[in-house]
Length: 249
Image (cartoon, rainbow, N blue to C red):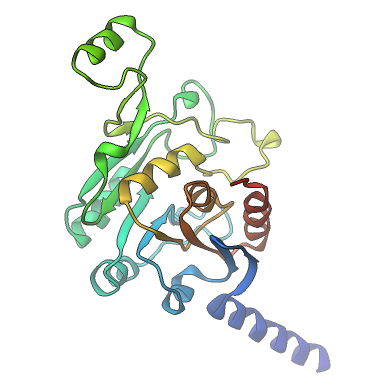
């Protein structure tokens, strides 16, 4: 009987932690909460949400679908900018409910070609909603083709970089690696990709309610932006905190 009572108290504490959140890391720019991103955002202040949410395929413990009402609340009631990752077919349905995105980008990592991955796709889409998006500031390296650089110089453009198109090829930090060798989250995003999204979305205080290992937070901190990360997995929160501690400004 005593053991049952102890278990009930522990489960109640766990539920309160998920809803209220427990801070596991904090510095001048970033904070990480262990908790449920579906509920914890109500107590937080931010002007943009940038996240790669669970897709609902149940490929890992917390891979549960996010209700459409959650995104509607953020976009229509909280009035924040929004950038969501997803597979094109599901994200197109979400866009149909929320309204046409102001930007649609495809992430297609060049290092996935010919490799096996735990993911169901080798590319993902990013839908972005928001005013005053900073499209021209998102840059990517030009090819080494001398003719292309010469033409850019004649036109008065930068010769080493160009405005990024709508397909971004940043290397995946983990996908395509053999499962027995993978130590990272199976859908972890490269920091360089997140820096592009943060540049595009043009906000100062970012929230990632499904932050995983913290790539969004790392990118924000390197760019001098404030960020809030939330994740239901304590191991991910711990890793995100460790990565943030290593960022040198």
